[in-house]
Image (cartoon, rainbow, N blue to C red):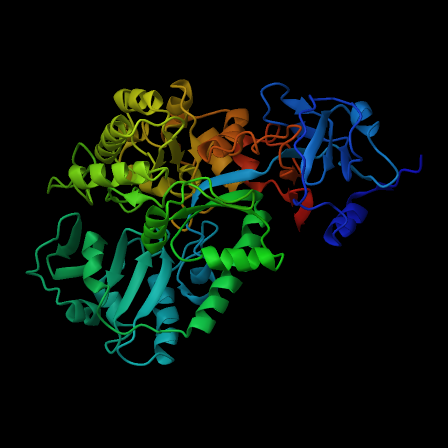
Length: 574
């Protein structure tokens, strides 16, 4: 038997040239781990690897075979080598670590923003900027923009500023007095406006705060900071650049192709897109062969309305693009921007502020029941304990009115919990998608809450101990989406600044890996399809140059991704 053997470089070249099988034409295989039964010729065999399968039947392996985009068999080097035939490609992993492809269960992609907007902060890593640098970038955009048209900055992070203070209206007045100017906090629940924007919106120091939002003030009047529902006042004022339909389609298509490359660069093979208007672009990118990750599409706005009207339920689609739960239905504010709805006043504030609840319980109840009656999985954004209580109440009432099995109603973020909330989550098998990278990236914000409260935030230990299938949700753009950064923070609870908060919520590397893989598949009701390296499942995996179980836990985020493979095809290579 003439079996060709390839080293790392040769394997990458072959894979890049399309030598590995794609995802089309698969056949489900029920062969047990380490099976060497008579099967179709594998397209690829990987041997001599340190494989963490995240399969509860057999957690570790040395080798696996891939055929037609799926894992064909998993087991020992000897057993898997015996499957090889003349046309089989063999990759010697040289003891590198292989794990299932990472799954991000809450991501906004921000693709067009990344390509076309003024970025005033680093979307992917911890990086400090200055207020002057923000003003300078926005001034450059103002020079080429007609007066009266919005100038917008993106990815501002108030604790990643060397000036050690918030932006204010006076800073943004330095950008322009002829343009409305806004800088959006990367958290998505606050923004900072200049005087011209406030004037156009008719906002003065005497303007009352709307329900679920604030126009912030200090001794000098309006600060320019606006939170949650209060931002609606600016939606219909000023001019915004309008693109022709053809240009808009091209921008969306290019941005989706770009973000797909970024996802797989960090090891993400499946991403839940919380989105309203990029479904067609994703379809185009897939048709062109440029979709490198799998998409669980979470619709909102007009697309969700169309699904409700057209009786399109969750689960419709295929292994590359599938409708999941709804887009996050916002119930409260932001953790990172300190507007989430708490049952106690925020620490250090004298005004008794407890955050923003953005809709009423009856409104939420009606929305959940309507979605459930249409066979669509509800998904609500809830950070604070008050909001999580509201969401669980709506889910409990909805499931009573519309008895359903295996709904797995989703709670995006589910940040601040307690024992009573955990019991209710478990009782209805709700699936939280909790912040992962925040423990590392946003540790500089935890002092706003204090150690006692942080012991119950991003409570991965508590979720697991309660038997809850918690998954990873980066919430990009509010948080970076790098899975290894998330795993490091989940394991250590140590931030970039060396501070440790809520150490009682630490999990093991093995548990963090499962949360970022198999639990993610459970979140979308696809655990029989992906999430572990198991015979019959989609061949999505990541090759790591070091073992996260073996390195210093504070160095996990630095592990290099050697390659990412989706459906047996190499989609990223270092």
